[in-house]
Image 1 (tube, rainbow, N blue to C red):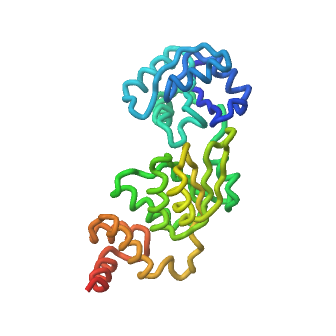
Image 2 (image 1 turned 60 degrees about the vertical axis):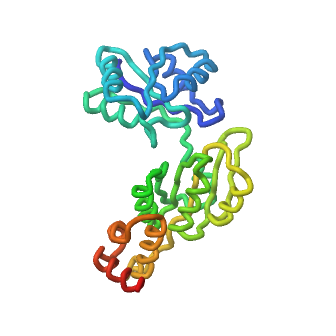
Image 3 (image 1 turned 90 degrees about the horizontal axis):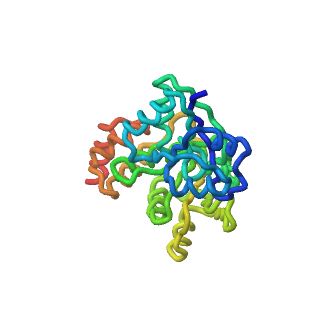
Length: 277
C-alpha cells in the first residue's frame, strides 16, 4: 500500500537499528534522507539498495509535493534523518503535515531518540520534562525563549552544537541561575560521555577543554514557586536587566518579561526607570 513510513535510525551505534526498520527500508520504493551521503552509508551497511531523495530543512514545498505525488501514484516511501527519529526537531515534520493534508497514510517505525536517551542517563527528574530542541541564534528570538524556559518547573532538554556550547551555557547561567546540568555527548558510541555538573562549572570546564561532538543538555527545572505569586517584581526586573545587558531595548525587554510574569509591561517599565534613576 502506498504510504509514508517515518523510520527511526541509530544515533550512533548501528546495532541499535530494529528488525522492523531494516525490513521497512528494504520494502519501500524510495527513501527520503536529510543527507543522502550519511544515509547511503547506513543502507550499505545493511545491504539495502533503494533510491534516495534529498529532503532537508532547505527543501522547497515543491520537493514535498513531488514526494507526495509519487506516494499518491502508488509508491511507498520512508523518511529518515541522519541519526535518530525523523520529524523531532527535524524538517521531516513538514513532510508529515503535507501527507496528512493530502490524505496520505503515515506510519511510524520507532527508533532511538537522543533527547529521551540523555534524559534517562541524566540523573535528574524524569517524571516531567520539556523538550526545547535548538535555541534560536538571533538574540531577539533567543532571549524570550530563555526567559520563558527559566520559569518552567519541568526538566529542560536542549540540543547544541559544539562551537555554540559555551555561549549557550553562559546565556543559560544568566537566565536560569546556577542549576544542575547533565551534558551528554557521543551517545551509544565508544566515547559516550555524561558530564554531571552545574552550569558555572560546565562553562569553566569547556573553556579549557574544547567541546567536541553534538550535545544534549539536560537541566533541572525551576524551583516550585509559592502559590500566591510566581515571582516578585524584583525577580522580573532581574530578567529585564539581563535582556537589556544582552542588547535589547528596555521597553522591548519589559514587553517580553511581561509575557512570562504577573506584571504588565507598564509596571515593569515604570519600575525599571525608577530603579535606574
